[in-house]
Image (cartoon, rainbow, N blue to C red; front, side, top):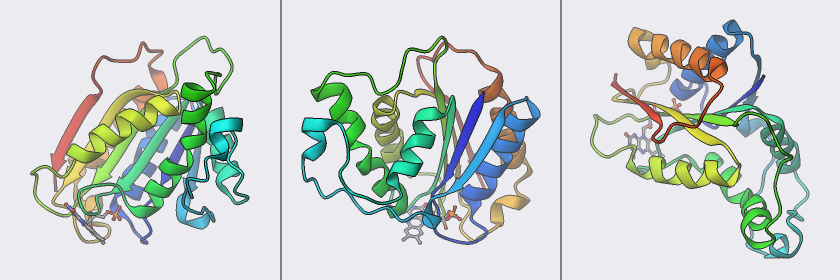
Length: 206
Ligand SMILES: Cc1cc2nc3c(=O)[nH]c(=O)nc-3n(C[C@H](O)[C@H](O)[C@H](O)COP(=O)(O)O)c2cc1C
């Protein structure tokens, strides 16, 4: 079982990154092979909407996207961690999401599979942390990730959303969030599916 965690926050001591590491340690404790990837270390340009992938299924832009894409396609489980920026994902996360348009084109225009047949479902979890209290901070992400995870052939397994955690590292003092992250990491690694009708939703406040 390969579990890939993608940390998209650009800052050091990021709250969403800390939760991601907890989820990965939970998955490792359950016997999974966990890989951590910090997106800002990769050089990935935004989608230029050139349209080439609509004919080929391939993105012609030569940068680190190919490396990250190969890891996403090889993973059995994906954990996508983002800060809330203006009610949505951060720019680094959005760039990766948009570049996956080549997978959308492969599936829905060229009508070809993006991965080979598998015995069990691929499953994903989303982590998001916002600085403000509650409200609608996670509404946009829920919808965006539903469509993104469908595009990358990942069943939407769970959300871990934490609001009211603004300063870097603040999440480390939130015992509930840190424990939930470990629990969900274990659950994500141990479940064999099927994909839940609605993702497990854990929403906490800092
Ligand atoms: C550009 C920018 C936009 C932000 N927009 C929001 C927002 O819309 N809602 C919110 O709750 N927090 C917002 N925040 C606060 C961050 O979500 C918060 O600091 C969070 O802890 C960042 O997560 P990270 O430490 O993983 O980067 C914003 C922060 C920045 C820098």
